[in-house]
Image 1 (cartoon, one colour):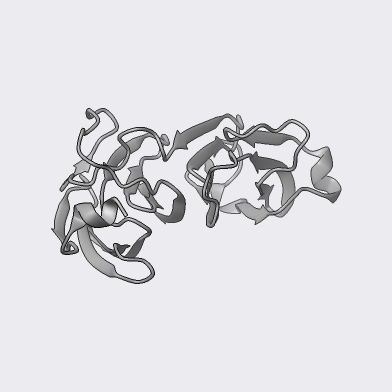
Image 2 (spheres, rainbow, N blue to C red):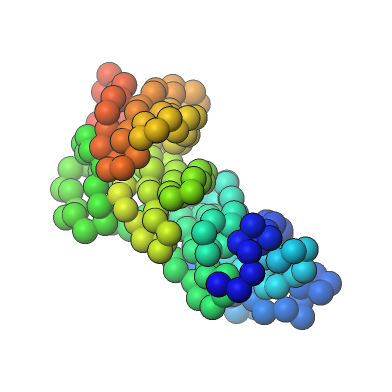
Length: 218
C-alpha cells in the first residue's frame, strides 16, 4: 500500500461539503443511494490531505444509534446501522458484513463460532445493531447489541461470540488472550460480565441472568 498507514485518518461526518464534493465517494450499505443523503459519511485523509469519502446508506428499519470509524491495517473501517464495512485504502474496494445475517446471534451458544458453522435452531436474540470497535496490532473486534466478532488483517471474520447480552456489549480490557467485558441483559442497566479467549472466541467465564430465554423473547 502506498504511504504509511499511520498517516491515514478517517473522520465521521453527517454529509460531504466543500472540497469533499469533488473527490471520489465510495457508496456502501443496503439502503438506496438514489436521490437521498447518506446516513453517515467517513472522510478519509492522508497526512492531512483529503482523499475520498465513504457514504453509508442504511435501510429504514435499521437501528442507527451508534457509529465508529477507524483506520486499521490497510483498511478504513466504519460501522453503522446493522453493518460493518472495510474499505481498502488503496483500491477503495469495500468488504461489507451484515450483522443481522441469519444465525449471527444464537442465544444458547456458550462458545465462539466461526462464520462457517451451521446456523443454530435455538431461539436467538435479535439485536444486530453495530455498537463499538476495539483494535490491536493483529485483531479488530466489533461489538453488536449481543455479540462480539473478531476480524483479521484480511478483513475476514475469525470468530463470533454469541449471546453476550441482548442490548449492548462492551469490552473493558484485553490482557494477553483474555477479553473482559459486560453485556446488557435487562435494559436499561442489568450489565453482566464475561471473559472470552481472544484466539478462539470461546467463553472462559460468563454471568447469565436468571431467565435467558424470557429476556431474549422480551
